[in-house]
Structures are given as C-alpha cells and as structure tokens.
Image (cartoon, rainbow, N blue to C red):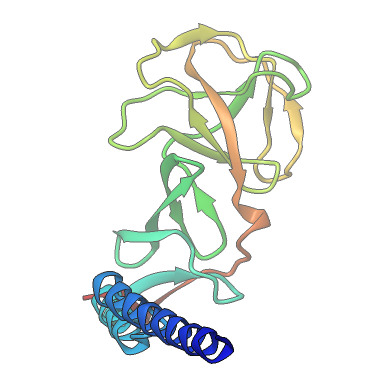
Amino acid sequence: MELISAHLTKRCSGATVLFFALFVFFSASIFQTPFLYPEAELAGTTVAKAQDATVLKEVEQWSVLDSNSNTVGDFIGLRGVGDSALVGFDVDGIQFVVEVGDEGFIGNTGGVFFRSTNCTGTPFIIHKKTLSALVAVSPPGSTVYIQVNPEQEPLDMITGSTFNSEAGGCERQSIEGLELTTAVAVVDLAKIFKPPFTLKLIKILVEE
C-alpha cells in the first residue's frame, strides 16, 4: 500500500513539473517575457534609440559676443558697414529687437518718461510706427522698456521726469507735446552681458 502511494505521489509530482514547464513555455511564446528572451527586448530598445538619435552637424554663423564670450541674443543683421548689429531676444515670451554697438544697447525709440517728478510709477516711451516691437533702452543699467499695447493711441501728456542716460540718474523734466505710449520694463541687459561687444564668426552645432 505504501509503495502504491509513493508511486502515485512521484507520478503526480512529475506531472506537476511537466505542466508548469509547458505553462512557462507557452506563456513566454505568447507574451515574449523578457526573462526568457532578453535579447528581443534589448534589440527593440537599440532600434528605438537608433531611430530617436539626433544627427548634428557643425556650421559657422555670425554672432555678437560680450567680453566674457557670451552670445548676445540672436544675430539678425548689421547696420551700416558693421557699425552696429541688430539682435533679437525672447524673454518669457516677450520678443524684441535691439541694436548693439561696441559699448551698449540702443532701442528703436528714445527716452523713458514718467508723470511723477522722481521717475516712479508707470513708464512711457515715445510713440512711433515700427516694424518690430517699440523698445527703449534706458537706466537703470540697460533696461529694456517695451510698448504694452501696439494698438494704443498716442498719449498727449505733460511729463514730470525722465532718466538721464549719460548720468544714469533721474531728472525732473516737464515736457508737453510728446506723443507717448505706455511701456513696461522687461529686463536689464547690463546685468547679463558685459561690454565691449564684438562680432565674430563662430562654429555651432545644428540638427541636420
């Protein structure tokens, strides 16, 4: 009786092992389990990486550089025979163009004015029609002031003060008859770039 029981137990154990082996084999065939077919998974990963690989090439382009060899904006073109360059910026989604010479930045309109007598409150810049955004560069540093609303009608107002670009401070200045538009300070370029500025042909990597 004990021999029969042992024989049956041995047969059941063998059948169980055989069943499990068949189950693993067919499961691996159907689901392509990575522990049985690691090369298949690795091959797929390699192909995917090869397809996603970006091919770069080296090209030369003109760029404006500061004294620390930092690239100043995106080079657009020259004014005159290399006297100054036009460069474009995108600061938090606000796009503008300024002129950069050997020692600093210039906007496409002049002066920043205030109603107050101490250069506080809302800034205003001289209104005129331009192809790009209306920009003035003024103290403190080389702060870019950009027109808030290009559709705004010119404002005829009496100013109370303005920044003195040469001295760098504020001065009282009562002027009437100027056509002005509301502006906002965007960035002080003097805190980022240091003169003197130069124009150079540099090598960069771009996607093919």
